[in-house]
Image (tube, rainbow, N blue to C red):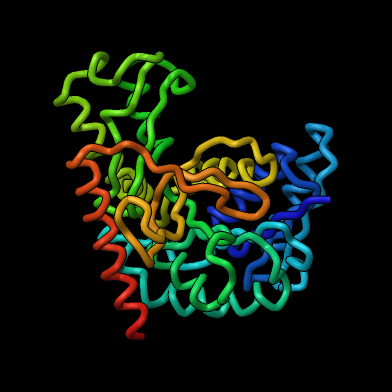
Length: 309
């Protein structure tokens, strides 16, 4: 029996629960939030929907943290979303308090679970979750690069006219304005991206990817992205539960890789049921590596702020 728990039943958490249940990835999904009855209602609604696809997946929800007992993976989406005039970093203080409270409950009820952080600012919150819990840093990752990558691939597909299934691309670095879309290594239908699109168009796609979350926040006016986020969460959990060997970009603990140490940052990883199996070091050129390290420096500034709280 496999079980995934999601802490935070807002748009992101409930969408992730829906995707996990409808894909039949696990045997049970637990959805927990401070709002008891609405969370019960969302869980029941999702559970009733599994019958449409003939799935035997149990979905339970509520405010009681005992619901996450025995979870193999705990996904944390709890926190306040940014507003149209905010950056992800502007949510640092309030979400840090929430993260500390959540992690104390996770340690009490699911101490052996792999932790997947979705709350923003993501790389800093992943660091804080590891610091508060004291768990093996290989068992905690942040879900960001998977989302940024699917946005990048979607934008490439839109401009090239080639379906995203035939596009290979990856975005590394912190989940913020200094993320690093690796255009040089991207391919469209097996051919280098630069042979399909002009440098000017590619630069525009990189910029749109960096601002992809803000674009949606501005369009929604109240709240942030959740459909693509739910799918990206599924991709990370699929790699964990199926151990398919797929390389996915997640915020992982660095101990010398890419010339950086003592921080969580978006890098290519192979995941399994023990967490991070391997950090894959791509052959980056000087500019790409410098951009990645600059992104890491920005995350370290947030970490300093967290440590001073």
